[in-house]
Image (cartoon, each protein chain N blue to C red):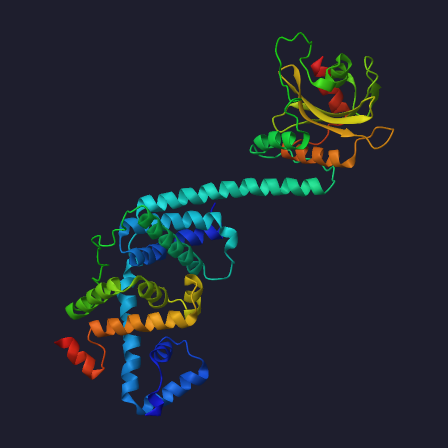
Length: 174
Length: 263
């Protein structure tokens, strides 16, 4: 009979996968990461404060595991293959071709962002964590969260042509 | 225009609802008269929504069976480990308190491996724990350093609890404390032996295959001339009894029946 902690952990698997896939851009590595995260979470479950956001706690573990993995593979001279073919999430629900195209472009742009900007974007815009929660997960000041996030979103805006700053958008169209 | 002097971070925080009340109102007021500001805020609002829409559906994907199975197995494994830890914690508490309370006969099976470790840790009994030594000629096979006395084995079989006897060969005093059954329904006797050097053994022996097997023994230097075991050794014993799921002491009549059955 699973306890609340275990039930919540299993319930958050889809969110952990989403974060992991977007973070490392590879479904295979993502599933390994999620598994490792659950393992660590169960071992250090006493470190979780009931009543706080469990997803934030898990994202922190997952993200640190990811950093460890990248570092380890670098030391072993084994590159992390982040260019794996990545299946676009199903957008069958999107109303029209324009919207689908725009979402595909958004996804592409997010994947091309520097890691430090992408993880902030994922946590705030996708997982809907606060700046403060994101700062805690990443161990960086809120100001850094904000500047990275603003840069990431301005860049997406530019790529998608929704930046209304006239001189820049003209240049971008060239 | 001074009102437009908001940096990107502030406008983004406005779009994300992260601004304090005062700054939020200031941005709102400025936006009423400054379209550029509105456009800048719109970029952040729009990119936030698009990011969510682009990546959000990923969580609707079914979790791969293999991953789900792995995690469920980990959860179960962790629950088992937790249960064992909890048991150990219970025993630590039992050690600290001193209740000679009735033991719960319903103790579950995992207590048994634990029981062995408790005995070894408490008594350092590796050398004493000699169960079922076959073919050594002793009638009952109990061969434990200080307990290797014929009178002692006879006493386990015959003397009712509450009695005090003197072992003829060494002159050691032996007290039969209680008789009970463990979780495996083996007949067990708790007893103490005061040696002539004023040390006391507190022990539990259980009847297994026509042999008395010493399950627990603590040697303690006795603080008093009357040779009663110090409280700390009794606490250890309590923890041990709890761990093996010892039943309540048998009544005088039940004990008599059980001992008679051994003859």
